[in-house]
Every structure is written in structure tokens, then in C-alpha cells.
Image 1 (cartoon, rainbow, N blue to C red):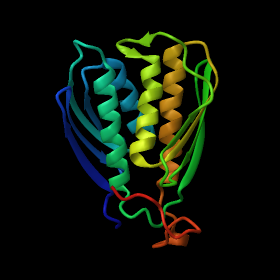
Image 2 (cartoon, rainbow, N blue to C red):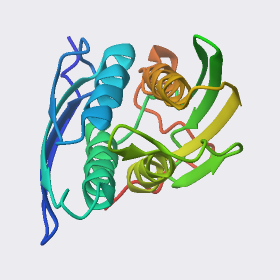
Image 3 (spheres, one colour):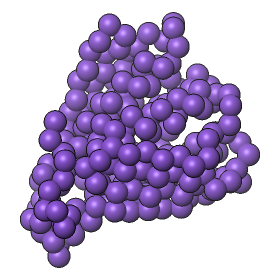
Length: 202
């Protein structure tokens, strides 16, 4: 049986203390405490629908706002994903998913490219879901892409409710990433690039 792909990341600054563990080959088990209820909710959805095991313990300066905590959790998640995938050999590399959430529909395309690129064609509405500002969701995803060195394209096809739009995005991200991180037995041991190289080193 293939050894589980897993990584742990800890980050401590004057603003936050984060401990995060990610298992790519999981079952969707979660234990998440960030102090931001909406972020806990969306990360739980992400792990459950991607079949990732995810543990997050975060303490941040929420008396200021949620920005530093959201950003630093994203940094840790992106770094954990990059490390958990090892040398990235044998990966399917690309995946996409369209997911509805009631009246909202989101489409996510992923490329484990070694390049941290984030494209969001349609911004989320102004405002917040609980303590989580909608624009911080964009920043979260952008930071994950940069730290994981992957390409993420987000197309929010439509929707009215901000919670539903964000939930559709996190579920679609999970499904697309689950596909992209699968090991393809046809290319076992091979780097999934005609360059025979991906920029994944720290």
C-alpha cells in the first residue's frame, strides 16, 4: 500500500500561531479551530469533499480583524499541500470540478504546475459571512495557490447568496484538487511535465 502523503506546518509570528496537518490520502476527517467560525466551516467542507484529513489550530489577533489569521492559515495550508505531495512524480496534475450550492454554481480548474497563479474572474460580493470578509476568501485562495505553487482558476458562474457562492467554490476546489493529486499508475515515477521538472522546492 502506498504510504500516506502527509505534512505538518507550524507558523508563529507576532500576529498568529498556527499548527496545521494535512493528509492528502485521507477520508475527510477534520479538527479545525481558527477562531473564525465561517473559515472553520469552509475548511471542513474542503476537507470532507476532497477526502483530505485536516487539522488546524490557529490563534490570531482577531481583536484587530480576521486578516492575519486567514492569511497565515492559507500560508500553512499551501505549504503543507506542496510538501505532502513529495516529489510530485506520478500525479495526474490537472483537475476541474463544477459544483452547485442551491442557486450558486462555481467551476474550479487546478494545475499542479509548480507556479503559484490565481485567477478569479468574478469577485465575490461585498460584505462578510460571519467574521469572514468575502474579499478575504479571495486572498485566502490566492495565498494557497502561491504557497502550494499551483495554478487555481475560479469561475463563479452565478449565484446570489454570498455563503452559497463561497461554499460552492470550496467544494469545487476540493473536488478538483482531489482529482489533480491522484496518482496515475501509467506515469508512475515520472514528473508530470514535458520539461521533466517542476518548481516545487522551498
